[in-house]
Image (cartoon, rainbow, N blue to C red; front, side, top):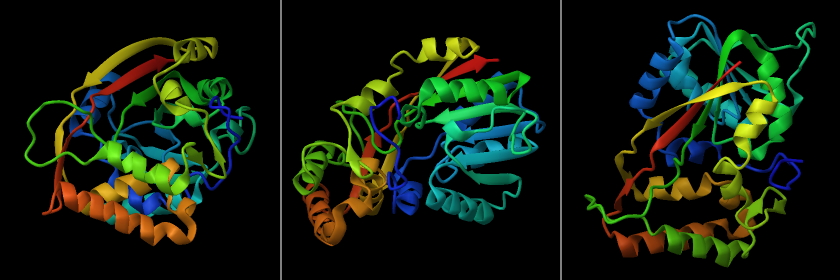
Length: 289
């Protein structure tokens, strides 16, 4: 069971992989540059990106390692990551369909994936049994390795009064529309989540204690400012379907009705289908083995 009080099932992001690629705002070059500097990356060593999704971070960091491994429990996400890698001409990434909790812990095990120079976790740790996974990742690192925990929100921006080139997507109204179709309890695969469970876990509840108990020291904190991004109506629709709480399969035979209602809502706010968002800053905690 994850720390969210939810039992894993493979439908969590079913049907979301392609939407994830379009609907999530890319990590910035400033983030990559900061990690390259902090970790002194030089093209050597191996990277393990845990809960990698379609390779959103994996593919940005892969050129700075000899080899990168994207690990995820969702086979559709990995297939999309492989397609993105091929399109980008990145050939040093392997994809492993496995839950982080099932990472082999014994270096003498033929299936042991390590050692790794760096392990990354980006928008994924809260779905896991964090104490168990932290121990497994500590064991997968080389003696001088580092675990990089990326705290980010890439599906939507933040509220505020900053003038933007185009209207903000009506995120509150979109949330209410999802509830109208799926009910008031936040959906997650075949089940639901306790109120605000994801948000509390994603904010790092007890996270430092978990990492230290697993043997890590630190962290070193890096902060990268958020940027203003322009988005099309298609991008906003994709951002909604990229969420576990609004994954396409959840709507069943009402999927087309939901998308039509969503697009109607967006057209009311921005008739030309153009939107802008101020993205949240990205915070990174670097933990040393």
